[in-house]
Length: 119
Image 1 (cartoon, rainbow, N blue to C red):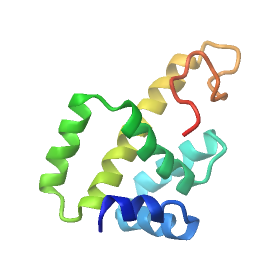
Image 2: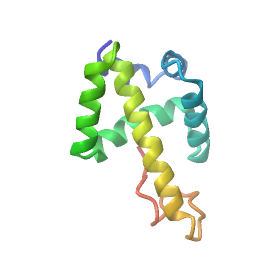
Image 3: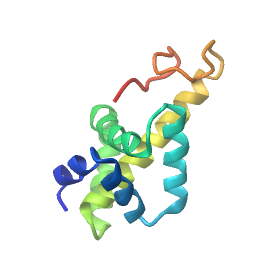
Image 4: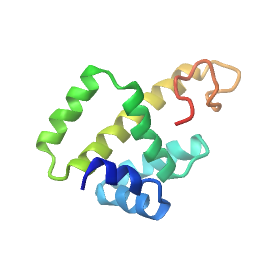
């Protein structure tokens, strides 16, 4: 599957759920559900947003890591999805930890302690 097709499928809640399950990682799916709930999103919305946030915010090392993962992965689209979700989860967790001391408690997308805005 091509990345463009993957991104289009993430727009459909049912297909996005299937893509998350196709990753074969129940723990990752649970982490996505938890992060999505924190931002008032569905898991599919979180996954689609993760791809967008990666594209907008990933640095050179992140792209290099993705390229390396793609070389080893059997399915480039799923490998890409996994890497982008993992990146987003890591950055969202760091943002929440930084925002813990602010008045919103890390709950708002507009929090000054958070670098995660709307996807």
